[in-house]
Image (cartoon, rainbow, N blue to C red; front, top):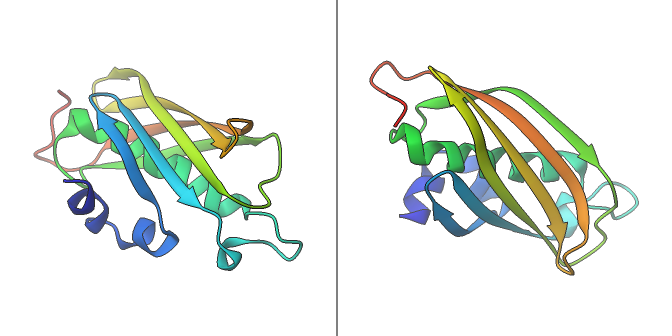
Length: 134
């Protein structure tokens, strides 16, 4: 199931994102630190952190939409709190609200030691004509 979810979009596979847990309205993902994902000073690139947060929120929302790729991000806000220099990041995302075709979600991004390194919030919209919010 998890590999099928990521195969809908090859980008998370390219980054090395792993699904650790998934249930209705919730997802926990892992992104290992890799040199290829760093900025010039060796910190995990903010775009990689934003990507795993966006992916986690999308998977949490997907548990309601039921059609892989049936929804899209329309707004993403991320607040960085600390750099990631090694190890991994873990993202826990949850759906906070949905009304009609719109979903709101939040994510907390921690390093391997449990320190919060970023938080994110996103707005997503159902885009597939056959997708219905569950």
